[in-house]
Length: 80
Image (cartoon, rainbow, N blue to C red):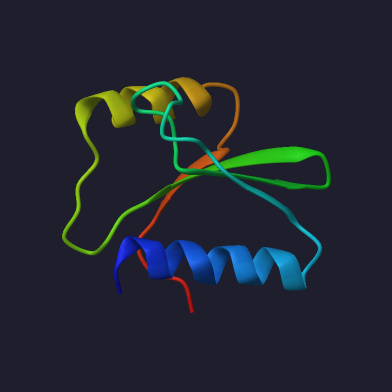
């Protein structure tokens, strides 16, 4: 599955389940996750990757910063 299809599946799931979904703009800071969802006032940051893709060092650093207090940043490679 390619990244746009995976992103579409996540967006559709969020829409069906009343979860706020926002695709971050390409103009956002480099390394920032692709998607933000908010469930019960908790932000969750998602980096979308295909099975072959890897996180860049900057993406890893950003996720570590976001996860400093609690796990709120994830990589999604498959969504069924």
